[in-house]
Image (cartoon, rainbow, N blue to C red; front, side, top):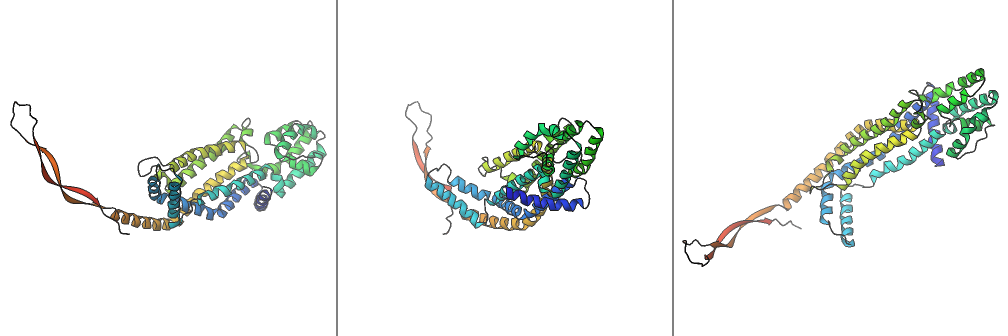
Amino acid sequence: MGVINNIFGAILNVIFDGVIMITPVAALAASIIIFTLVARILLTPLQLSSQRTSRGMSKIQPELTKIQNKYKGKTDQASQMKQSQEMQALYKKYKINPFAGCLPLIIQFPLIMGLFNVLREPAKYIKHLGAEYTHIASTIIDSVTNYQNILQPYQANIETMTRTTYDLADKTSLGQFLSHLSTGQWHQFVNQINDPTVAQGVTSALELKNKFETFFGFSVVDTPSGLMSTQWWAIIIPIIAGASTYIFTKLTMASNGQMQTAASQDGQANPGASMMKTMNIVMPIMTGAFAYTMPIGLALYWIAGNVIMLVQQKIVNKMLEKQDAKLEAILEKEREEARKNNKTSTKKVMKKVPVQKKVEEVTTDEAPKTYTKKVIKKVPVQKKSEE
């Protein structure tokens, strides 16, 4: 992950430098949003491939169901292999790669982890922010005589979290350490400085850092769970992250036609569609839970990504409409030919049926006699398809 962290850190660093040339206010949040936009643009080819696969799978679902029904109940290896071969032939025929839909998720995982690591140590990757923390560290070393004693309660937890040992006497190392302090810990640190003048000097040194990191009243390096005691309304952030994930997933499923495949042709539940519906509920909950415990900057990445992808989805839909129409026309033509080949007709046949003979009411115990007669009936005959 070190290489990935450095790549994403370098990209964020370039974006950050560009943003602060315009304004230092909310520079880190703006950089994350721009970074998200760049990432989504780079992932557009993969999204197109994924959407093409999802739409294609939805279109050929009736054909897939027929194959599955054909081998239903057959668990022997030969039948399973034939089923797999027929399904692979179907995918190949319509140029559908069933695994293409997983690529965006696979690629986004290191993206999210890389961004998380960068946000966990922003001063390490963003040079301008790192220089600002070094300046703050220098101010503290020069003016706060007992700063190490004040910071000592936080040191073990931060070093465990980052797996790094910090030399608090060195201003560069101290700056990296200070970048992990939450807003609440900074308040505690300043409040423990006995000299009001010194405390004011440290507060002044924090002003530019706060401008960089604050977005709508929250520091993007804080976690909502850590802000609940002082800013309980931070709970809205994971809620928005989860809700935006739900809306995007729901609209994407509807756009891909997966909502219409909830049941197979025989009326039974479609396991794949049922799983997608379950994921549409589970994923937003998981996103909200992660956003609650991780830096707000990561939640901002998810929220911005979902909003961007909603717009991107409309563009992708227009790009794939022509392909959808072409595939639908091919499928309809083949289905019509199949219906003609399997069409049934009727023919008249002569058949003998027993008929009970009517007799006058008698007092004998003799059973009524029966006889047979020939009748003409119409029976269905399936038309044989030509080889």
